[in-house]
Length: 342
Ligand code: PLP
Ligand code: COI
Image 1 (cartoon, rainbow, N blue to C red):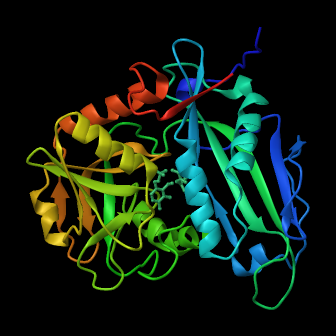
Image 2 (image 1 turned 90 degrees about the horizontal axis):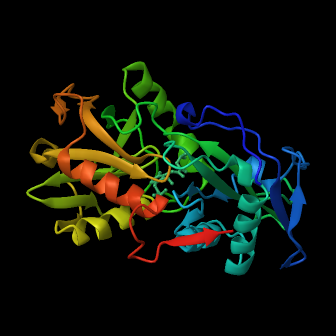
């Protein structure tokens, strides 16, 4: 019998809860070593490590779900692996090979099985792979040693509202990333760059920010921790931009939307188009779909209201249900997105 935990699964925030083990691997002298299992939450890092000073680090986020059948399902890990490889390329770190990535995430889940939240609790097991330059130096250069860690933690919804509309602040005077910068890879610096804007948003009662393209300030880019989508005329529309993170959730929703008979457009989304959407939302692994009830433009103070009754829109709800159904196994996995972990 597997051990069960006495956690209030339905009330879990998107936070950190200690689990039993994490897995680690070092890259030294040009090659990856053996995967190690650790029960420590600490790492021993040189104070002059390149990751601490010059931000040479990247991370990923994916989820595993407990199905009604008692089987653990891992969602689209290959895509996260590819994205971490692209992040590594972007800031000159060695790629984590697919086999190593796969072995590490499976081990991290299996060693912490009792932390996988129960079926239909609204919570899931969040996996956080992390790659960083552990080698040291004071000159700006790529590190000569790297560490790859995967830890897991059970999480609830990213926005405390769950699947309920939130307010978002549209900012003109902050940029998260530059068009030819690192916005399209998942590196920590992008998130540091967004912290001030997020603070302003929170002060104004918004859950997070929406950034505009940093070159022309004419188009919607993405939200702090999630991609943006708008829906009108039975069409799912999501921004094309060189500075946004290619979201695996967004790509999945595009496929689901088509499958449900909606049109899908990935293209530039001009600011003026906000007036015309019937529904808008933020999407990502952590956010899943976070319906946006209202967007407040920080500069013009203009408000765009999408939910008058405090409920998510019809198509957002349909997309959300369809995505969750695949992830938890309520519907057959027609897309080949799920791997069982035993
Ligand atoms: N955009 C940003 C900036 C993110 O941090 C995330 C989260 O990973 C996303 C979008 C959504 O990506 P995904 O759906 O792959 O989690
Ligand atoms: C995710 O959705 O996995 C993210 O990484 C978003 C956020 C927690 C940074």
